[in-house]
Amino acid sequence: MIFISYLYIGIDDTDSPEGMCTTYLAAHIIRKLKEQDIHIADYPRLIRLNPFARFKTRGNGGVSFKIINDDKAEIAKKIVLDEVSKLSMFDCDNTNPGVIFYEGEITKEMRDYAFRAIYSFITIEEAEEFGKSVGCEIYKFKKGRGIIGSIAAISLPLDDYTYELLAYRIPENYGTKRQIDYNSVIKMDKETFPDTFENVDYSERYIAIEPKTPCPVLYGIRSNDVSGLNRAREIVKVSEPVEDYCIFLTNQHTDMHIQKADNISQMRQFGCYEITVTVKDTPHVIDGGHMFFKVFDETGEIECGAYEPTKNFRNIVSHLRPGDVIKVYGGIGEQHTFNIEKFQVIELNDVEYKNPLCECGKRMTSAGKNKGFKCKKCGKRIKSSQKVSTKISRALNNSQFYETPVSARRHLSKPLCRM
Ligand code: ATP
Image 1 (tube, helix red, strand yellow):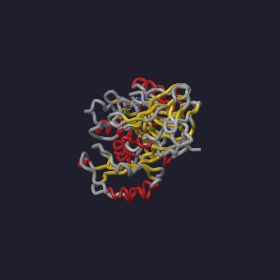
Image 2 (spheres, protein in one colour):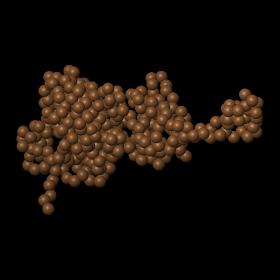
Image 3 (cartoon, protein in one colour):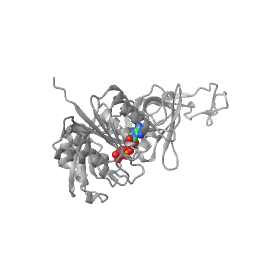
């Protein structure tokens, strides 16, 4: 058996809200490597990490790729370090690039580290110590925070995965309005969904493939397979030059950030969970349009939130009522609220308790505490204070999943079309 040794390369934290994108930098480096006849093995990877990480620019993504570890490896390393030095947004305080080179097998402890970077917080010092202990070659620029994500980006196993095709603009056009033919995006969505997904948010009339920031990305199309992406690329029309395309293998839309919790007491702030709970009170809206309701189980209770950006999802949530059993997916944020990404109805409470109907047809009223009911119309009284149960019709359906709209969805959230 031929044993191929790889050099893994991880890059993170090169961009700022004003520009650049670590995927673009990776695509640019991959092009430079090709010019030296150095080719990457497989697709480059875009790995989304803890959605609550404090210093993220947008979606907390790190990038990695691998090349055959031969006599050109040193040339490759130099190209990577030169381009990260040249193109990173060093002026921004929060841009602290980190580059990792690693030779050898990805070990179990590295895989465990990667999951820690998705589920919890890691300090730069912890990442550095860990990287050294497994033999990573570590390059920190400024504070070098990017090494946290770079080590995770090369280490994370991908049992479930999707792909994203990114089209990049020429630098002259950065910051200008993107020239994308929206009708062609809708056509692409109609012809390639559900192989591709998250293209358009029809409820919010929002073209989701187009970033809203001044970064080098012209558009990004997400898909379960590369053939879907290639079909989609043919259909989408743009009227500005495309500098390059790059397809990334990614953990986006896999729910990899979600841990199964057996009960509420296991859940921690800044963790993301799937948990079955019972609705405690009727959802209510506060100023700003955010909707809240409490859920409970035998170990405690927690407030759930469907925030204003989730738009129409709040209408769905408003149909929940006390006693409904639901499986909720989401994360506990800054305000200690469980932010819902989606939920499945396990059992609807479709029973309502009402005062009994009188023989004359009028609904009776209470005659006082433990004094039964009386009819205001005909004066009849009954001794029992027991209310009667009636079945009510519900707008939600048992077993059905309900999700936030595309415009409010996290990169890691698995859409229902992938469930
Ligand atoms: P973009 O998606 O546009 O590339 P970003 O949202 O990925 O930007 P970065 O600029 O990469 O943001 O910044 C995120 C920073 O958080 C990186 O330095 C990364 O190493 C670090 N980081 C990633 N995961 C964790 C974690 N679990 N704990 C602490 N820091 C983390």
